[in-house]
Amino acid sequence: MGPGSFLDSEHLWLAIGFLGQILFSMRFLVQWIASEKRGESVVPVAFWYFSIGGGLLLFAYSLWRVDPVFIVGQSLGVFIYSRNLYLIHRPSAPTAVT
Image 1: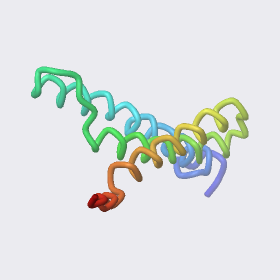
Image 2: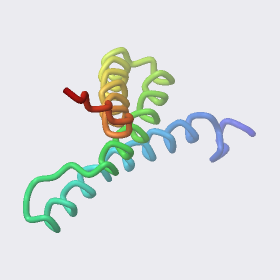
Image 3: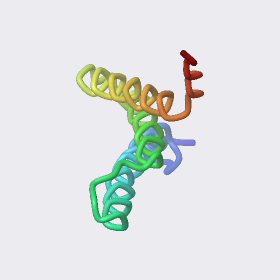
């Protein structure tokens, strides 16, 4: 593939960056729709999946761009989204009988 090829690495990474941004933006739409349905502010589990999917792609894109500000921001975000999913899906602690 030559330098003008549509499928060169520059275009591939731009596509990854835009896909990450789309996934990351979808979390707001999901949260808004869920809140409107319930009539109160809620954060559905899908919010965290869109957050981590978009965050991971944006983190990869930021590594490719070698952008330290973006790298730090996305890496911290991915950690937080992962932690929230862990807290949501972890097994419940057994209750003590006294």
